[in-house]
Length: 197
Length: 197
Image (cartoon, rainbow over all chains, first blue to last red; front, side, top):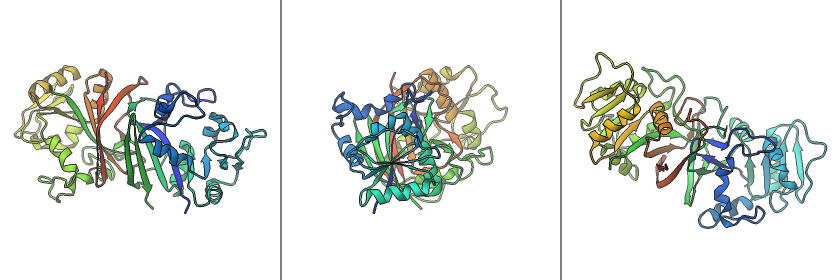
């Protein structure tokens, strides 16, 4: 059955972007440090693929059958020019769909009737594959609503000190997780958790 | 050579205590969740020792030759009744030494002339063993001053949502780390980092 899996690169102090992230600097100041692990395969941003143990995690990401992304992440990434990977459908929960969004190989759906609807539509589109989720705000909303199934953290051995936190605004109810896999790779530790209900 | 090693149990969202930590509730509301991994060996708080892969980390902690702890942590823990482990010396940086502190097997030194002095004294006391450091504020001060050598995070698979963060107030200069060991154990992942200079 399709699962919603959050994939995020996070510093040990919990940041997914440096300070001052905006449309021109999607990862904030020096936030690219968090994505160095992706680039070991080459400098070309289109065809890069990490070598070594990270390749497995990278390939799993690209085997997902739909993308569910927050509007901020979507905009900051330029909507991936309308194709995140392999033309799989992209779902963007938002109250204000753009009149002229990016157009590429992927069908893009702006979901205006809430996060639950977005999750339902993304799962249906992914079929028997998983849904890749991106974005801190959307992840937080899904966690609060009990809609997130798994979390794959690419833990980066750096303290950024400031920026945008992945886990924030969650309230004070505990959410228990279970570690289902960990992979040590050069410059990154991949930690996969199941969200317990 | 003696190294300063920070040992802290931390939730995936970066908390080392729940909300409302004070002298009566040192770990805050439900913060004891973060220390469950220590108790698998038995219920007795004096003689507990985890079983399985965590035992190695636990034994390393107790092989340290001195303790350097923040005043808050020290007070909240009741000064460990004057003996953290094996009577090794305890150093507490503070501007206001208590007139009547806990008395036990361990010599306790209240260091009033700064964190650098506390680090120097603790290392000297530990000899060729390492120094166990405890406490978020003290860790942050040591990180900012470049005085921390290693960090052993006991990463707990839970999102606490609120409480006291371990890595906070660090400024926005990056601090690079290198993962030197990871151990998956029941209910905890032990991640040991070297602080790069």
